[in-house]
Length: 352
Picture 1 (cartoon, one colour):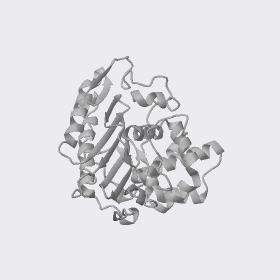
Picture 2: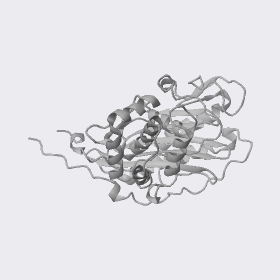
Picture 3: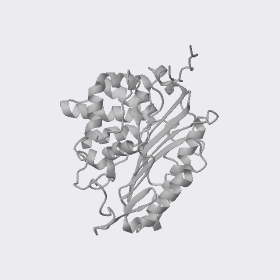
């Protein structure tokens, strides 16, 4: 029997979902492949970015390595592509990265359709599905649901996640994924929510839904979820938040899961501030059993610091104001993950 079959009920970890207030009107999804599936999500007609969100002139889209962008932002796309690869260079394991900056229209994707165990970042999907369900039934969250949601998002409480997962049921969860165009996401079976299979591509679709007007999550729902994701406990303030500039707000959800194959570490987040509106998702699987949880966290943070520096470089972004001063990463020496939020994987059974 394989290890994953033994992880029932061990839906683990901290899942990171970041939320960021959206500034300005919604823009179309930048995903060439996801745009067709996410047509219901986009509030504008076009799916692939044909125009810069930083100006009114229509510009051709260019591709530089891992990134696409309006022609005027070619240098930013090239630098982001190079830095994402730089951050991953020499790092063991399997990784995926997605980055989207609404202001410049730059979108980057590395290993975007590779599947990873969600760990606790599934909690962001559970929360969004719960809010959508209440929109459709035209009912408010109960006091119990609010309490469970707060525990699930701000403290990554596993029991609360299980309660809300069970309350929603697989049909409502899948219904939300269908509406969101998240066709690459495969829900964990038999209650194993932490084994939901996610991709960097689909995680970006979720972050887009949370940070701009759309027909699926209304303003109240988006504000509620982002508000919780802005209040995560200090042991969750790591990952894609690394290198966030002063004056830029982050909302995040992280996840980590140990099993017989190694550590699975994920971090997703959104970022906003004056002239800033961007999202980052990094998924990481350690494949060397000698690489511990901190190794995976360091990998994510190496990428995040480089991406944050590029997206806040006034010369690259074309900002008319000076680039925000990069603050020391709030998690240069991150607090250890809360042990109660992690359910260790079961030992590998003897073969008989």
